[in-house]
Image (cartoon, rainbow, N blue to C red; front, side):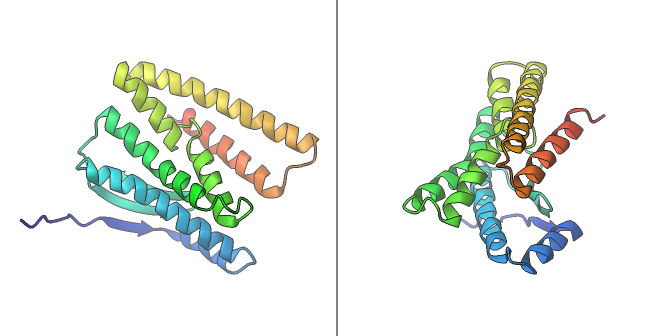
Length: 194
């Protein structure tokens, strides 16, 4: 029995190519390639879980801030969404364990960072998707939205406090400051949109 797999559109816009060109032209090109590779593995974890549950993605978008998978209309149950949300970080956990013999190595550090970042309880990250769908499994959507909104607020407050303390104690580097500001700005923009 042959099974036909529908075509998945892969799109990459100017921001992705601009960021890629920027990093590949400088001293950070190897770090960028490692980060891109482990991000692709992370997304492969999500894709495998989606396909396992019978949900074929409509498109994959390579953007400036990462890789986004757009699902077709077929929706997954809240439990399946929880498994799908955790499958990407699970890949990073496995990679982290594989490289744990050298905790100062770039692959270990990148996978640890991807794991922790994606588990933040923010709406557009895996941690937020997990919390929302876990609550949705036991309650209604309005309750899940309220809990996720509160979790986002607490997370943003903690990130800002961490940023302030790191600036006062003078152990924040430029990348960390930029990263926290971008997370806070994009999350606040999303929280108060519309």
